[in-house]
Image (cartoon, rainbow, N blue to C red; front, side):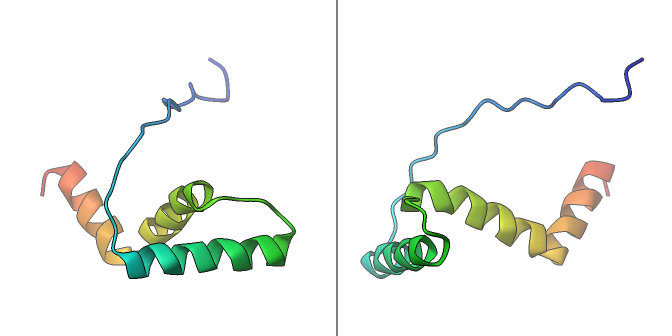
Length: 73
């Protein structure tokens, strides 16, 4: 048996959402500041998945509820 387990499914899933104009403006500002900070050309669509991942990873209540759900409790 190999030490590295089989990689999980990495097929991208496209998600379409509708957001408020204020949130769209804030995300645009974030992308501008991100690009200035890192000298990058990232678009909002490039940043949102990382932002969501970071948000979910930092939500301890979500992590606990998810573990409980997976355990069937």
